[in-house]
Length: 335
Image 1 (cartoon, rainbow, N blue to C red):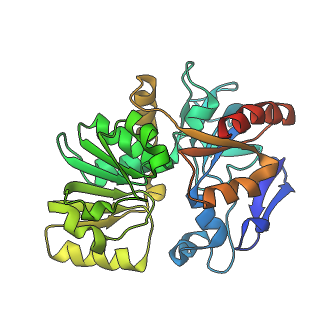
Image 2: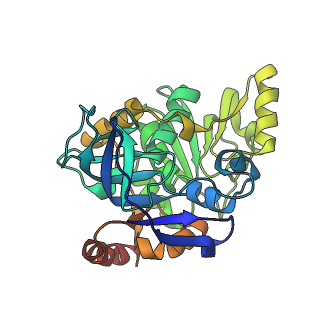
């Protein structure tokens, strides 16, 4: 099977496509033929080893794991102890690594669920880690409540688009921060107000918020503290020494809190099923920007690294005919 691998940290040029042996499912695993997967900022971090803190998870000197976390595909084999899935089931989910490959083995009790008949591989692949990340930060860490004022920085990105929708679902007053070009899209997802970061600094508008969720790690607690209401919380998806120190300090004193959480280590099937239920009722939807075939993974990385993507970038895996038929639609969407 074809699979993407990194053997060293670096630019997109370190990305390799290798022929590997197809995995065989253990007794408690299912073998999935991957059809679509995502290219995310996490893949950038794992490829570059930056920020340095990620190397404690990915490998200090060189990458230890294969890239790819979010996927959608079809079950093609099951271990003898598997009860929840059977051959032919369409499924989607998230794994720690290895989703950028033709085939993937996932434990039956892993972060994996079936795809509703009304939904596609593409929209479900786009709703895995990013949606669960937004849910973990807003629901589990910030304890979001109806009527709160919530600001989402990076509202047009993969995590940000889901954060806007989830904040709206929980009854918050949502302000999104993005470029002016993406303002209408962010409003359509549920933001009552949008701030164009190229024209205005949200920290200097005079507005205050109960929750500031920095979904792209472009700000700091120190800069945002003045825009937080008493008892407010600042959330960031990007680890740094500064945020770790701020977390320790605000845990001991002050009523405004700084929070970083490695949510990728705490994804659960409960969260995935919750996201799926909201998608079935139309409360959540995936935003798909561009699609690339597996062979153009380096180009996909370069595009994600620009920081200009809207929602998600999909990589098309599986049969070559299917990949190149689908890339036409993806390229047209991106144009």
